[in-house]
Length: 125
Image (cartoon, rainbow, N blue to C red; front, side, top):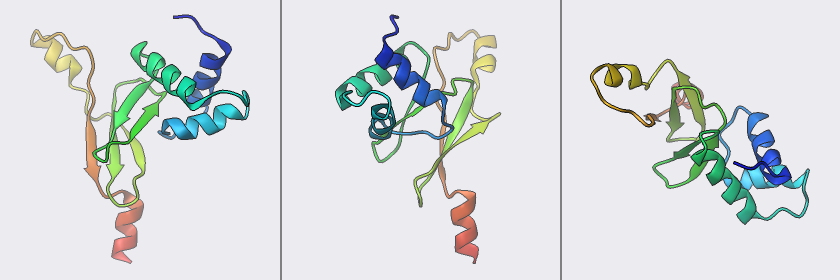
């Protein structure tokens, strides 16, 4: 994969945050560095970086597409109340067990839906 200044900027923005932004958010941040970059260019670079294994894509039940630069094995939690997305390290990667059983695993994506800690606390109050 060739790394242009635009692709470097998109990847740099993704690696600088610990959230799970959508393409529009990434576009706003990249435009701070490259004012003329189009949303289509950002989308294309996010897709290509995902295909290269440098980003994880996460589609929510609502159909919104988010991106994660943490490509280590982990699951995600999506709050149905506030929409926040969080990482769940230590959960969701069954790759080793499946491979011991003879399966060839390309990727694992586990998404857990429910109520986040903050929204659950608000409910209790």
